[in-house]
Image (cartoon, rainbow over all chains, first blue to last red; front, side):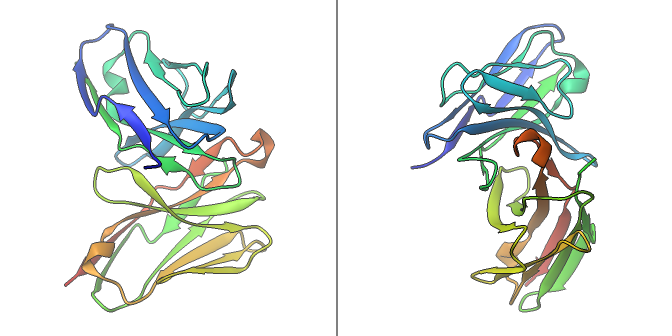
Length: 112
Length: 113
């Protein structure tokens, strides 16, 4: 089944403890992207990637890192999480920017 | 910002009625995309309309695009309770080779049985 898989689905962590949210797609898509969704603010793009080793910042990149070493994987790294990074995170992939995106099921992160 | 804005923010209708949502955006686009999100779940891509298209259909969905007014509309005909969800429009940034994708804040549609 064609899908974007994010893990974990839920995560509670403490301030400052490094964490990684994984994202993997099995559709051979070039484009991948991370979003956070907060009430009243909609979806905001964190980082995106248009191919292996090609990444760029979105609207809210501060406090996040990404890497794209393989086409299928696009992990999101929070080196030192803070409470304002508590949010619902989505990974998405697309064949190219001229096609729709397939979204993962989301990761609900709470930083205390 | 290129961010699209949906209108209305919330829409409540009875089953069988049509639902129309609008999206306005600010700069030139290559395409405009519509997504649905059921509460707390991942977004589902509904339809993409390219800048050289004026109308597109997919099942009970009809999307129009007016590039002169920088606006789009999504019409859901004969709504069902299962259509209850948030609907978002999204536009890619041409300057970023379409990698940047801007979402509006969405329209919350409630369809009552």
